[in-house]
Image (tube, rainbow, N blue to C red; front, side):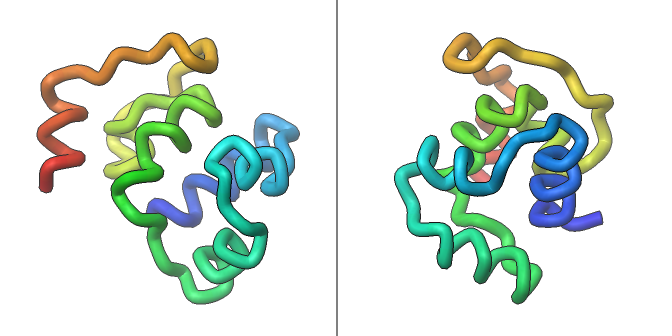
Length: 88
């Protein structure tokens, strides 16, 4: 499963709307539609905010290798591993 797939699957699981995520990221809905239809991953600059909005770890969002974790919005500190992943 790709990053884009994890984003949209998690939105569905958590009954969140893509429009809410777009507003949170301050992007146009057409941008997110492009990610979905072209199976294109969002730019790295959005990954931390996406993980916060979805309440999952950045590691899971990027790799799919960690179980989902519920995190309160706005209260997520990045681990050293998560910072390393973003740097890549």
